[in-house]
Image (cartoon, rainbow, N blue to C red):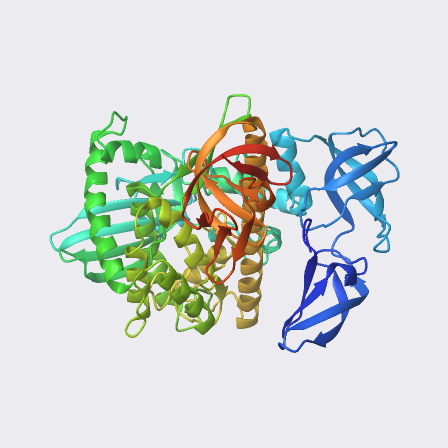
Length: 611
């Protein structure tokens, strides 16, 4: 259950149970509960919670507010549906972001209560908001002493024995392309013209050389699952000495790598592939922005010899994209939010960050390496990155969408081709931003598994993640397996161990996604608080029985229009048609309509009024 909701759901292994607000007892989001289940005539199940078996939280993060002579905590987690009474406030004051330890969970009528155990700082300050998210999701701020000690004992020197057993690519022109803000560079690329066609090198930091599966560092990676990224901060999966120094493919430094080498003919057919342990020396650290400037013929500082290779890579990538499209690759137009900060760390702007040629180039090259590694390891137990085909319910939802907006969706033949035609029939970027999101929500979520079920979205039969061992657990484990293969030794992991790694990697990826959504949402609220009273144009992206959701054109922000705020008429929601219609003036609001709105307030969401 969450705030502003009059119901909750209890999730069981076999079915979900609807619970109305008066029947939730004193249970909160993610608590394990005992529920008495009833079945309605329409076969839907509803229930009454009779006992809380296990609490999801012992502490809660939120903002202190004063109410008359008492202090309450407004929890940051909007899925916690009540405020909490603060018994002992200590030195905290109204407006502070704090953590309270719960001592009494109330009884459904009386508020739960607890004592302040930590003051994080003033609510609304970007660093404090980031810290509060870290605390809310109980993310690891520090590494254990054993892991730090182990990292400190790793030598940065490359021995002559190690050098002698590796392929030497130090003289090969090599470079990294990453976001401008990146500090860990785990992939680099090289391209050579050959008599037959091209030779592509994808060099990936050999993190597994430094971290064995029995080490404290690997145990800590198992706990973290991946790195967690915030606009101005990162919680790395591995200590900085490894992630930012020893294993990061920094320019002009000799680094150990595993290189996937792919020979192509002139028609982009793969002639040969292999993976080797190597040593490289990057010639440049490039950003996506720099490379895009080069491709746009804008002023840039990329050396001429590297620029020539980049233009070859651009043409090469374009041919790879055509090849992927023919196989059935699905491309979704979903811009990410780019946060712009001033020199003092305050958020000053939001922009939509669209995929550019430089992003596509690197993605294409990484796909080549990942697919090869999956095929290389497939004859033995390993971890696959899978994306299952949509089921009949998913397809029915998408059929209805296609019918409603007169889009092409014919699944009689190839399912990937049907989705490609569907996406191609969506008119214009603003429609893509909305409808692509809906389509994606009705597809399965990609995950890790030791059973290969293919990757539907990429149209690849065998696929894994190999290219980011600094920041992803799966990739680190796959590196260990690749090294086992190269050195012709028994696999480092049993099937059971691989299944556990896949489970943790999937679970922690889901957590990282949730953290990212919360971080985006919180920063957008902070930003929009400065925009109260301002007017914007926008587009309706959703209509429900009591609200419309409008996405602003100027900023990647969605806000709520409460139907009670539509003052010109009384509007009814026609659920089947998905529209609002005025009772007197018969004015209609529907999804994809353009509207003008004003920001009226920003609390636990952005609230708008149609003008």
